Length: 75
Image 1 (cartoon, rainbow, N blue to C red):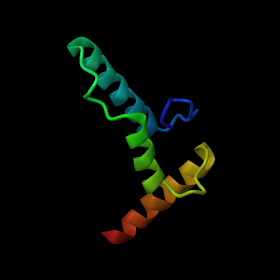
Image 2: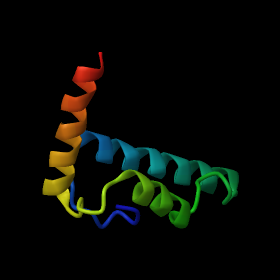
Image 3: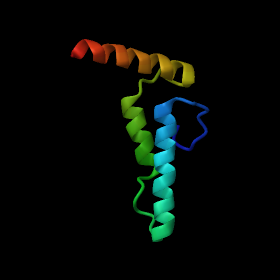
């Protein structure tokens, strides 16, 4: 997921990639390399948040669907 080698078409993932590209463009235009966090920090975030058994697009979708259903019960 971090380096873009995750073949996944879900809206949220595509939006994240789009935002990363926009920040990279901003870094290039401003000649700065300290705006976007590093891959290590992104990995740690995903590693802390996403369960270990979520390892591909299919299991990610199942996990995402579970979270969406669970969120409906919170309200």
